[in-house]
Length: 444
Ligand code: GLU
Image (cartoon, rainbow, N blue to C red):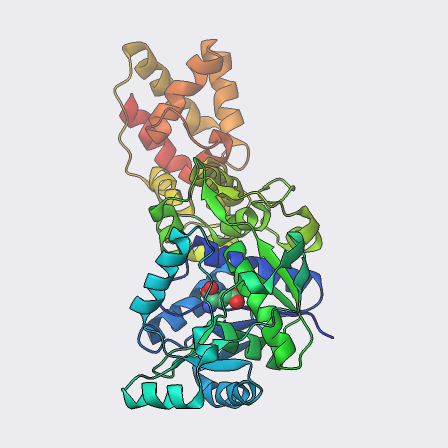
């Protein structure tokens, strides 16, 4: 059986950090097991689902390099849900309930007030045919609950959390369909997982109690169980994930100059016992993927760590990969000279400006001005074909006796206008003979 995972976002907004991580983990697990990842658009909520978010989800996954083997849509499968729902109603596993939200809330409060768990007491199961007819005559429309089998123990071996046990009697019969006929997520998701051959359900641990009820839904529909993996949720560096960080998505990462490789390298390893490493290539992330390495403690997301990781990724990126993001005219040599000094690819434009000019040079001391005047003369005489920086500084050292900082800094300032920057040996050939001589003369 082909390992099949699914990423199942609701298109009611943009994907955020937690969604992106869920998508990535589903993808990594599928790849690590020679399997496939499906994208399932959970758009049963017609009022809140929007096409532009479906498009954004596809674009966000593409940006991260997460390829999917197929796309499914819940809104295209309502007939199927209807058919399976009818089977469950006929079998008595789904029943109509007529309480209003206010009545349910009141009941909850009473139970909590008595120190009892606020579990739905199944008043609707006790209704006779005549009771139901009377309620409907009053204009009440039922919502529908899945009847949990209190005698069947619920358990599974979670790939992250280990052995899980729930007592069915301590859970409320979940509502699977609203009074207006619309579907809640629980039952359609199970029907889909069965029909689409999903072998492994991977999602956040906020779904653990859903899994407890869904396990009985699989059985009630005559299907075997998939495997389950519930990963710990993300937290911020100092406790809970902030609202802002929690909402961070691909657009924000892009705007900050974060590359997809950095997001992948970080999200793949957060919350695992493996270190976050600046891996541009995802093959090692796939090869080393193992749920046994995921911890149960919340995974700490530190934005500063992402920026630092991004810089280390940028330093490794190949010119062909970044070319489209670079300023006009910046060639391979330019990129390779500059990349080690960047935190983001966008910063390459600043350094390219330094190469192509014009530059502003701070005023030099009289001594240094005399020195760069001499440098201008030397620059005219050296061989520019190769190792021009070594030739220039070597000749100047001989001629002036200057060395170290006194030798290099005035030259760097005169040639780039900056005290720090990329290796001058790489930069000088990019500036070129004529421009270099003009800059040295100008600074003198
Ligand atoms: N649409 C659900 C969510 O985004 C899917 C959960 C699942 O993976 O089953 O929470």
